[in-house]
Image (cartoon, rainbow, N blue to C red; front, side):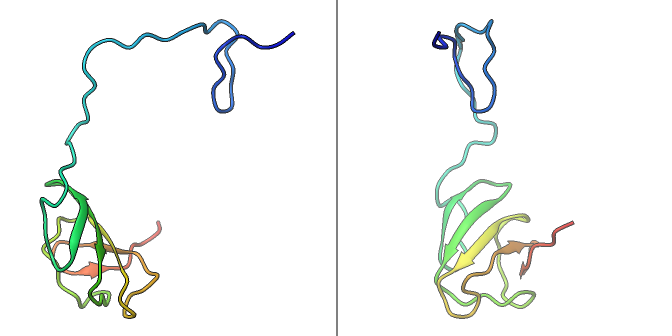
Amino acid sequence: MSNTKAVGVAYADPLFDSLTVTGASVFNGGVIANTVQTTGSSAASNLTAGLYFLTTAITANSTTTSAPVGSLATTTNATGLGKLFIADGTKWQYPVVA
C-alpha cells in the first residue's frame, strides 16, 4: 500500500493531510540589497548585518569596514581569498567558533 499522506524531509505524520496558511507572510527585518556599502558591494544587507562579496584585499584585524557588526564577507582578491570574515564594527576579523 502506498503512502498517500504528506511526507516531510525525515518524518511522515500519518494523521497529517494538509496545511492551510492564511494571512500575509512577514520577514522580520526585511533585507534590502545594497543598503550598506563598503569597498565592493553588499549582496544583501539591512541595519543589522549584511553579506559582502568583495574584490578588494582583506586582512583580518587590519582592513577597516563600516559594515554593521556581524556582517560576513569573502573576497576574490588573493589577500583573503578562500577565507570568511566577520565585521566587528570597525575591522574585518576571522570568525571565532565557540
